[in-house]
Image 1: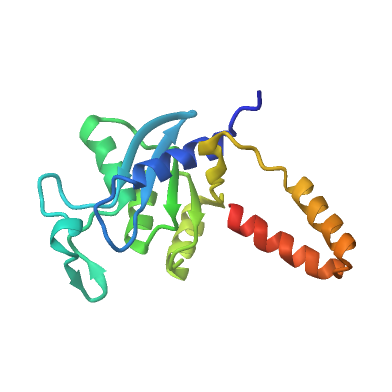
Image 2 (image 1 turned 180 degrees about the vertical axis):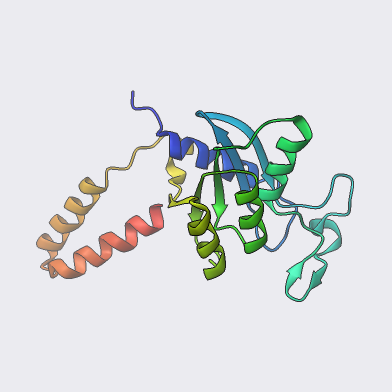
Length: 186
């Protein structure tokens, strides 16, 4: 039996946590990991006991919902609340962090940020991460792991290429089909 890779395991956790989000604009989840152990998780939503965007609408000021605490910040605050050190930890987040979360991540001592999707990747956030020596890793999330499926992309490509030969379709077109298919599967 093939086991799920650590990066996909922690990214899956972040995607699962994002399902608790109360934000109607974007569901984000974050997981903080140290020594291959989950120490905190957070999703974007309102303060504990506060009005939720899903129930009362977003409170948007200058293009930002000020009702929402970002997932990254919620995870860091959970560590602060319960006394868990974030020094030299890793963060797995469903979307690239904003500038404010970037600064909090750096100040918390987190050394690696793994994100699944680009989202308004601000050049200043990237610059700050570089200056602080925080490693950025884009790790697209493979949602098939939830279903216990293993996708063999090489087999898919071979099947497409064989179908292309059978149907006399140019190989370049078959490769485009393959790329489109694998993008949809990821």
